[in-house]
Length: 610
Image (cartoon, rainbow, N blue to C red; front, side, top):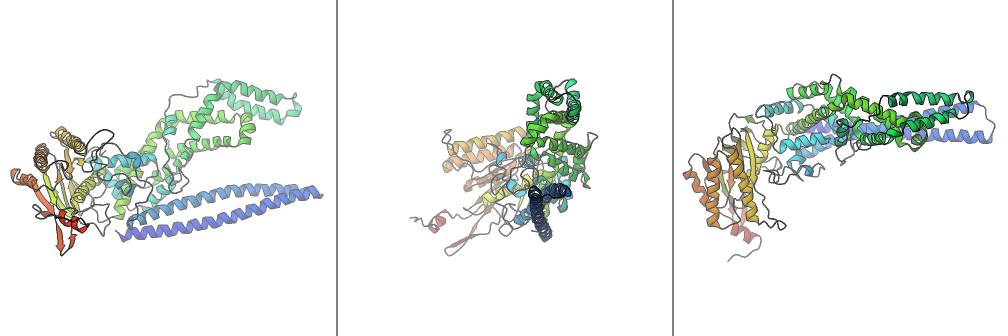
């Protein structure tokens, strides 16, 4: 791991810790001052009740009340600053945890993105605890997380242009630690106020309203009535002594009667925008951070252009929405809702402003949030690149291939990871990987798959060098039976292999090739039929122009190297034995393995073998 990244995160953590402590000290001071002022105001009121104090005492009480209110506002700002600095501290703490290999307990595992029967995600630990998504994810919004998950699930885009554009953006963002800290901290404030473990905010309900086709439909009369009548009613109250008795009461009743026809729709719209997405107002600051950053990569500049595509800056529009929602939030106060709100037709006027905003900017909200999510997803890959400068950005070949030098598994700690060279230089190439148990066959296949995912997502690969073409990854590794569906383990594996073959048949004539990884192929049947079936599958796959690797204990499959000369190559792992001690170096060697260790392993665990 790079010491430059460690130093940057340590400096950021120290800076954020100091800022949090400073805010907490200010918060305690303001809290104490508020208490003293409150006691002083109450004391003056009590004193005036018991003794004839001068009228100036009322002025003193009023001043104390104003100061108290100002301190309440200031206290809220200090607490918000503290939460933001705490969120920044967590950004650096997560970076240090990744550098130390202690990232497995991060709450963002991507379980929500698991798809049944996905071509490879379940076999390659793409989601779940200790997964690729958990390692990479630095997003704070649902939109960003969904896009990152889509890339890891194979939504490559137009090869090679989209992949190359993401690579350039990742390179651009990687050294921008301050910017990545900023969007992480601001994003964390959207949902749980920056608290660790809070779920990421979902803008779905807001977007459903913003893009909806069911307006308030109040007609031309109601908006004018809503704006003018509160002024008339307040004026009537102010001049009540000069008007007939209860004039203002009649005006309030008139307001309620006239607006009764839209009261239900007003309440529904207000609830849809506020109660479901209270953190929405924070998007303005987050979007502004993206708008003003001086990016160099074209993909990031495109994201900025989307924020300005409407002619009005997204920041200004979201800030305007935030002000409307701030006024609308006053309805949560019971006293305000019962007395002040009806008098001023508060909810109706706020919803009218919301409807005006929706008609003006609602259709552009989704592209804004998608642009923001795009930057977040790229920032996740950039953090990975920043922390692992020894990983190489893949070269994108014009034709399908997978050629790597010093290829390792990125989910294995650096000190335990063993790298190997792998070469599949064209269509119709396959490696037959043999070796004893626990020697590294499955890990090699998973390393090939995970690095293909990283490469096509636009991230660096865990290798000194990787050249990759346009590949469609599919695996058969962790096959399980199903008692509920009455599917045996062997039949489940056959279904999986059928999917692999069907994908190869579907892509045999196109420019995109299937990249297959098959672990312990057909191990659910007897050795004779397994050998016949495995050979047939490999012949079919390479004949269809697919490329990949197959691990097996059946050395007879290695005969394909001579049968399909130049297309199939035998490689193997082996164990090292010293007395009763058995070790593995996890180094890939050419040819078929010449040893096995099943009986030796049985003896080591205490199972007697005759």
